[in-house]
Image (cartoon, rainbow, N blue to C red; front, side):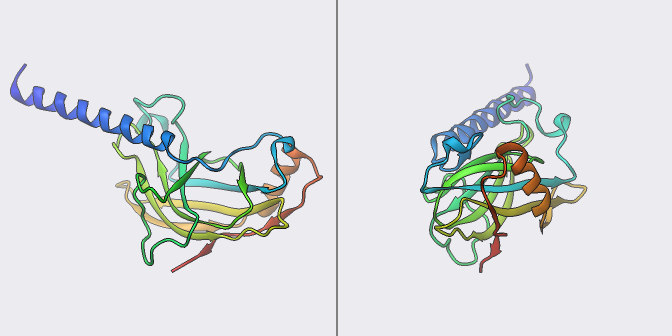
Amino acid sequence: MNKLAKKDGILLLLSVTLMVFTLACINLGTISKKTINNLKELKDDEVIIIGKITMEPKIGFSEYHRGLSDKYRFTAYIRTYKERPPKNKVLHNMLDDNVHYFSVALEKTFFLKSDKSSFYIVGVTVPTGKDVLGLQYPARFKVQIKKSDKAVYIGRLHYQEDEFGSFVGMKLIDEFDKARKDFKKKFGRSVKIRKALVKPVL
């Protein structure tokens, strides 16, 4: 084995090790909002968060997910703060002790149960086999929760990349009617949904 091949092998091993460490840190971190599948799982002091994360162009398996286990494919980790995040900071380190996470499937409406308190979205991470730290997308939004809420719709966060894979923008899209239909199909009509689209904060 020549020196160049040996060096490439060492770099590959380090990259894989760091990727595994990063994903493990997310798993060991505080995943405070978890998927709900039945209204019986919802406590009186909890609320259902409804929304969606989409990408443009859509992430394809062959390009991004080679080398990842099924657990992480087509998954996004939404990073949140309970308190107002530091001013003008729009991308937060996933190892930040103040960051909490919730895991959602890309391109699909998610239903998560959360405690009845407002929170801030401070970033989105999409694990990939292509990049050690995954794709990192900025966010700085507040999700306003009321004590009377049973379910709230926060909108669709649609992230856009250029032909080089660099982040170029994000759109907040209101798909309340479709999300409400998805909710009724899954949970029935007994719970009223309030539209509470995320609000940008400085």
